[in-house]
Image (cartoon, rainbow, N blue to C red; front, side):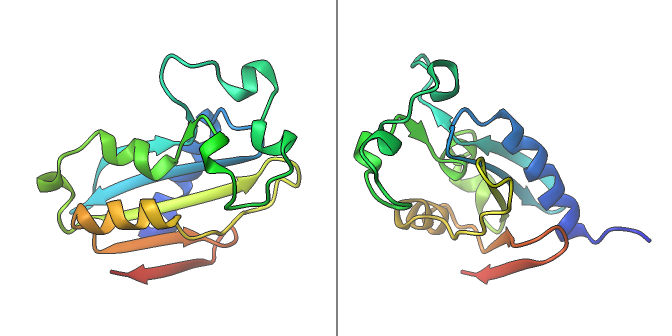
Length: 144
């Protein structure tokens, strides 16, 4: 049986997340326009900074922050932000974002919507849909 296009791109995003340098959660993003991948991104430290996976240290863990809290202590750039940094608004207009997250400790999907800042950036770039993997074949679609 042939895989549908949405899960095809989500599978690619899942491969992209393997480059994540976060020790809490791995996220991968693929941006697609007219059936062409125009950008990818994963969550990780700012270029040139020490990666959390290299020193096995997470300030948010050490400070006992829950999901969505304490970002001011995190050195990582979100997967969506990294993908958006590589393209212009003109390229992004009408595109779709495919997002996959996996919790490092449980190895289970972490189907979270983009944070408020990423959501604003995605909308500002003119992207029209977000697909979020919930399980290997099930996803959520957000129309913007």
